Image (cartoon, rainbow, N blue to C red; front, side):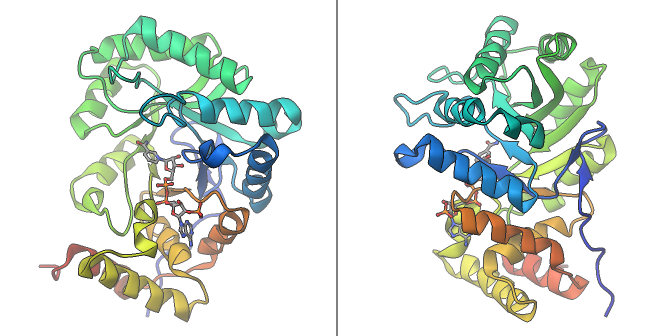
Length: 304
Ligand code: NAP
């Protein structure tokens, strides 16, 4: 039975010359549970030591509905201040453009100041990948393009990405930009399969964008399925994972990485052991039969 190509040991970030790991680590949950600087540092080390170089955060991470805006970036900033040698080991990705309780603001004035604030909190000179977190319907894409390209020209951000944009929103922004949009970040997981058939990944391939998968385990739902369909997906991943000596979460990462768009799953775990374990996904090999078996379980009905 023929196998799908193995995932590469590294990937390029979109059309940029930046090399990234095929898995990323996310810091959405970093500032939870009163995590200390030394605990946060242990997690950053776990990711980098495992070979994960793309670290993803956002200015809003830490916000709990009342306060905490900026806390995840600030905690990372303390880690970097204590150990500056960590900075060159990572490709640092952050996001902005959500200003609670507005909720979205990508006007030139707000977004420029948000980028400056992210730099200050993380105590860095430059963000390697700045992503617009969610589209602001009230900002013209031409204004957004100018703001982002000016931030690149000023040396504050190196590359530009988007998250949770529709395909027409990406097309419109790309139309007004001279620089490429290097990445997109939709929710993708074995429980969230829309992008495989709605054109999002096809657009990413056409425009040369790296697709980052947020919540690649469905935010943890894949580990404790709550309905028959989710349980069927988990059972397929268990079957395939067991045959290759890996657990369900690793099999889920491997499944995403087998797609030709070069999906980079963002590991959400804040456990050093699970972060390191995720890299086992690089060893997985997929037959078409197994890959489609997971898709069919997720669809809940056979393919036509
Ligand atoms: P996820 O990987 O789908 O879920 C992670 C959760 O699953 C954690 O609470 C983790 O707990 C739990 N988990 C339980 N068993 C696990 C196992 N065996 N292996 C790994 N995790 C296990 O990811 P996520 O945290 O929802 O999101 C990942 C990243 O995506 C975020 O950090 C952020 O960077 C990005 N994100 C982006 C957006 C956006 O709008 N752009 C939205 C959401 C997330 P433990 O910590 O105890 O392992």
